[in-house]
Length: 113
Length: 114
Image 1 (cartoon, rainbow over the protein chains, first blue to last red):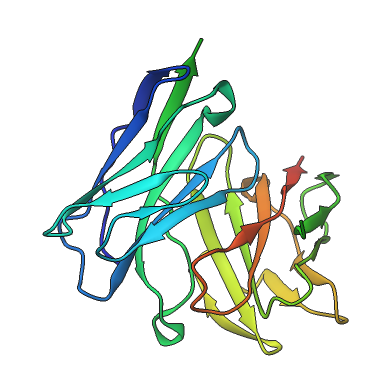
Image 2: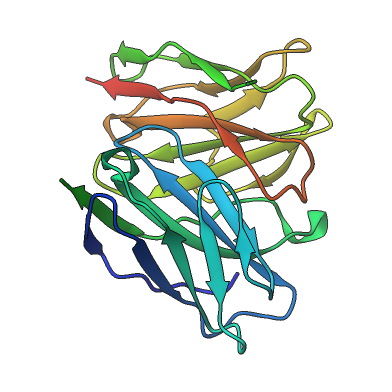
């Protein structure tokens, strides 16, 4: 799986958009970008995934650059409950390639009042 | 909403003892996983399980570890002879398919080896 690079920490004001960047310059054509988060020692929680196109769900938006070498997770109106470690993970979605998730250090997002 | 459950939430054991961590995955899910997180460190993959056998395992998952699905609902992780360095948070996860985008994680079991 391709390696990802994320800033170790970020702050965001409550109610503002949180934009979390991720670099994955060695991503392959069949690899998806996944985002998970972990709120204070709880189990990781899936947020969103994408391949090429931008994606949006009830939790967040995912913007993937045209060359797919980087992406940004956007939480449009961050709340205090969004304070967590956010993980960007790149992997294929293929049984034969293995199903494990490889977590890096992630970005620790602190949402402040 | 269906969720993965884990018991116990906290287990304290003495070095050399055997422990079994229990998980109840989401009922229609077919793939099951164990991960661990040593305090202050990354979440690490241990093993994945499908169709009653291990489909993938990491270097961490040595002969001291085993997994089992003893019935239609439980999924267990056994550590035969615990070491101090096994102290960690252990997370169970499940997914509907191996290609599923979402793995659903349980709340974890904190294992403390003294």
